[in-house]
Amino acid sequence: MGIQITPSILNADFASIGAEVARIPSADWVHVDVMDNHFVPNLTFGPTMVEAIARSTGTPLDAHLMINDPDRHAPAYVEAGAASVTFHVEAAAAPVRLAREIRSAGGRASMALKPATPVEPYEDLLPELDMLLLMTVEPGFGGQKFLDLVLPKIRRARALMDKHGVETWLQVDGGVSLETIERCAEAGADVFVAGSAVYSAEDPDAMVEKLRASAAAAQG
Ligand SMILES: O=C(CO)[C@@H](O)[C@H](O)COP(=O)(O)O
Image (cartoon, rainbow, N blue to C red; front, top):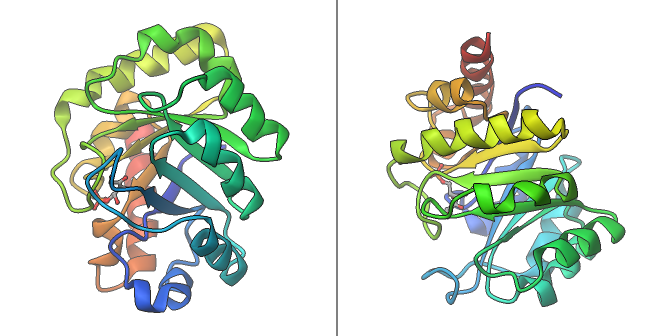
């Protein structure tokens, strides 16, 4: 599978979202941040917008649900066209059932952990997941500073994945840039969300390629 770069459109121009997505043809995924103003103090969009973005691009969508009650709402995002759906374990009532529902609806099931949520209690869930997302900022906003304190957790998550021999991808999200991506890759992450680093670059697509090269170099 190798390194994958998934630009977040949170800091893109929402008035021209189709054109903004078209600026990053080298992206492996497009990361869409769904926020409900309850689980996080910010509000973005719901399945209707995800459906419109999915129609506008051939690049698969990676929907990150920062919402309460994902048990009820997550399957709608698979129906809207997201190929991968991430729910937060802090918000899910029944994460195993939810991961299975996402998979049976045809999506890749992914679970996210906020920076202070430990990974060890969820070790046995890894085979149920296609991806584990470790947040490297507190969720809610783009453009925040990368939290180095998450690096040991990335290493521990990678060790648990190796121990269980699972194919689960390990994603990081928040403050990922040319300055921080190498540290994440060295620690064992293989899927990288980058929002402001991509959309504040003069050439967003060239930045996607630079990020990929940097992560690949760090992994050797
Ligand atoms: O989920 C989130 C924020 O909660 C992220 O996807 C950010 O949108 C990433 O933006 P940068 O930190 O890369 O600017």
